[in-house]
Length: 174
Image (tube, rainbow, N blue to C red; front, side, top):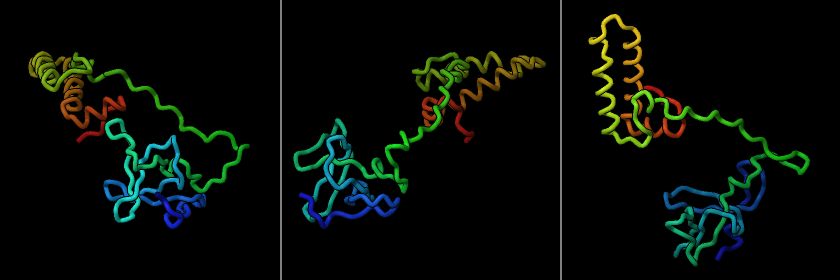
């Protein structure tokens, strides 16, 4: 299926390993290791024109009989660093702090699984109760109203809500 003419050397990071260049389904170039790997996650095959093509293997689209399972080269490239056995394991980034569990949802008094309609209803109910025009001179109510409005601004926008759900941090203002 594969020939020696498909082989190239990794030059980008200087590791010098043998790789094969493939074209993904989106038309982008992807370097994969030269030989099939049972632990890989990329299906590679030659199309009718002899061009190496690749795609990600998923449960919905498992490996087909004409495809070989390979590993993307970026997962095995030394990236210009010659590592030896005495270097020890690669350094890991410091752990991220765990996100605060649904702080903005708590401000509105809704569950994290609440729909957009539930969030809107909760905001309107709280806005009627806490609006500064109803409580002139009450700084605590005005501050709580600001916090409820901030929570609604984030949770009412699907993109900002998804970012908040993943990171636990309020996304930057629009």
